[in-house]
Length: 297
Image 1 (cartoon, rainbow, N blue to C red):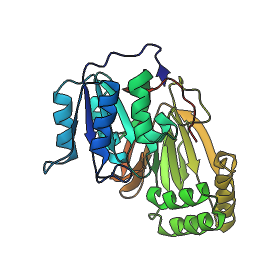
Image 2: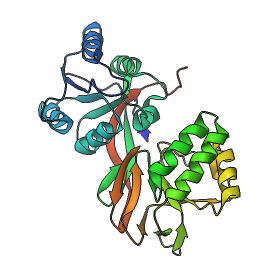
Image 3: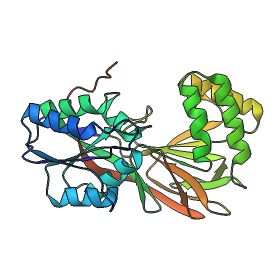
Image 4: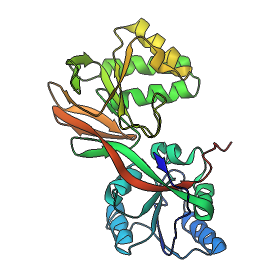
C-alpha cells in the first residue's frame, strides 16, 4: 500500500449509507450530513432504495465524485472497491458493518464518524493492492477450503476464549467439505491442505506494504492435538508459528477440489468452482485514509 503526501482536492463527495448495516444505524445519514456541513465539504448522501445497494453505488459514481465514501458492511465495501477500480475516484470504505475487515485495515480501529472527519480534514491517497480469484476480487484476505467454518473459531480466539476457539475449530473440521484442497503456488510443487489462506500486503505481518505478493498460508491440522495447538497460537496472535501452518509468498496460483470450493473473501462467503485460479493485483483501488496510521483506543 503506497501512501501519498498531499491532501487531494475534494470538490464533490458522494456518500452511500446503508442504515441497516451493523454499525451505521438509522441516524447515520444525519450524522454524515452534519460532518460534511461542519467541515464545509460539498457532498451528496444517498441510501439504497428498492433497486438495492449496487444500483445506489453506481448512481453515486455516475455523479463523478472526487471521493466515494460508504458506510456499510463488508460486502458493500468489496463491491465498491471493485466498481471504483484503479482508475476511479478515491474510495473510503468506512466501518459501518459488523466485521469491517477492509475498513479496519485502512482506518485502524476508528469508528466511521471519526474516520470520515479525519479523512475530510487531512486525508491522503493510498494505493491499495489486492488479489483476484476466479474473477472475484479481495483486498484483505481469502480463505479457501473451510472458510466460514474457521471464522467463528478465529473470532473466539481473538476474544481470548481458547476453549471456544478449540471447540469451534473442531466443529469446522467435522463440517469441512469432503476431500482435501489441492493447490499449486507459482512454480512450486503441487500440495494438499485442509485450507489455504491468501493475505494481501494490507494486513500481512510477514511482508512490507510495498511488496508485490500475496502471503499464502496452507493450514493443515491432522487431528485434535493439532487443532488445540492451532487454537493456542491463534489466541496468542501468532498462528503462523504453528507447525501445521506453512507460509510462503506468491504472485499467482491455482486451487482445485473434487467439487465446489467454499471460500470467504474479505469476510463474505462465496462458492467457487472445482478449479479456481488466483493472482496478485498491484493496484486495486485508491483509498483516502488518515495521514496518521495510529490505532485509536
